[in-house]
Each structure stands twice: as C-alpha cells, then as structure tokens.
Image (cartoon, rainbow, N blue to C red):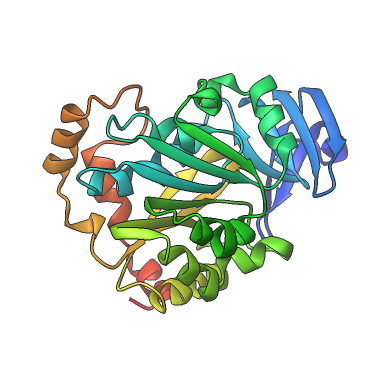
Length: 292
C-alpha cells in the first residue's frame, strides 16, 4: 500500500498504536442521525460494508464470523429456547441466526437508531435474510437501558437468551456493559437463561477484555469466554456466555453436531462442533488476561 494513498482506504484504529484498513470501493450512502454518523460502502474485499462513527459494524462477506459465534454457542447449550431479547443488532444478522433454531417463538429486538434498521432493509438482505420482517420478531426503536430497566419488567417479559449486539463500550454505550446493567438483564432471564455479549480484542485492548470479564463474574455464577477471528474487526475477538445454570463448555463436539442435525440448522458457514470446542480452548496469554 502506498502511504501517499491512504485516502483510497477505510481505516480503523485497534488502539493508539495499531490499526487496519480496507479499500473503499463505492460509497452508497452517508448521513448523520441524532445518535451517530453512518456510511454504507460497496468494497472489493467484503462487499457491502456498514460503518458507524468510523467503526466497522458488519459486511456481506464476513458477517457469519460474528453472528454465528454470537448466537449458536448459547442456543445450542439451551435444550428448548423460545424467547430471545437482542439489544442492538439492528442489522438483523443475530436475529437471522436465532431464527434458525426451530423452537424459537419470539424475538424482541431493541435498537436505539431506526436508521440502522432501515439501512439494513435497504442494503443488507444478505445479512438479515428477511429476519427483520419475520412475524415472530418485535422491533422496538428504544433505548436498551430503558427497555431492560423499565419496559421489560413492567410488561413481565422473560427471556431464555439475552444478546448485547452493540457497538464497543465507549461513550453512551458504556453503561450497557456495566455490572448494574448486566444484573438488570439477568433479572429478565428465565430459569436457566443465558446472556451473551462481545468483550473485545484481547491483543489490542486487554484491559477492556479483563474489565468486562470482572463485571460478568460479579453478576453470574458461570462465565464462559471464547474467542474467534473476525476479518472485519481486524483481530481475534472475544465473546462471553454467562448464566447461573448452563455452561456451553460442558457440551462436547459430538453433542453440538448432533444438536445441529436434530434442529436442522441450515446455512452455517462457520459454526460446528469442532469450532464450538475450539473457541473455548484458551491459550495461556488469554488465561492471564482473563485472570483464569
């Protein structure tokens, strides 16, 4: 790459010393909402690509690295998941993976910014595959904090899985990664329910990863961190599944593959029994970061 032609690339920092880039291609749409600046690009490497405030969110060609791993380790670990709450996730990718499980009857998706949902419907059908218009989904344009602390409890909602499919824990989003908010989410879980979120890049933001693990451990009896490489995020990326009853690390490769067959989970491009086990296999440097 010619250092004089950085204008041809979309760049994102991983920390103050490192970053990565993709060639721009064609700008399809850019704008500003009351909450954030958005861009949609058609790129040569990853197809259509979505950014918020200069950070990569999702792309057509690699979204399965993130969405399959965000959703399936938890839902595979639950014998009969029926209700799921997604905070964020306005691109519909997580909802699409949830709906692959035949027992799921209802998703509540709480997205702060309606424009995110509108852009996904317009540009990213290959990410959501129609899940945003499935009759089993209820989309609420609402603050996730307000839903979890006020609306959900008032309406007596309970969920088998709660997913935080959010931007990084910076600025206004930081409170949604706090122990208090995690505890508020836990109060909305059914017996044996599970809670999933991403915890960041351990190589480039180890303090964030370790801090979020401490928050989770202060709220849940079982916290199972796992790691996958996500091309769009330029790094190994951490996720965690938390619960008071269920531990996805106890499910074997053979169990996972059997459940995939029994539930007829279709169109999986990443997740299987081997990757399930591999994600939870932690090298020593990660154990040190996680204080395990």
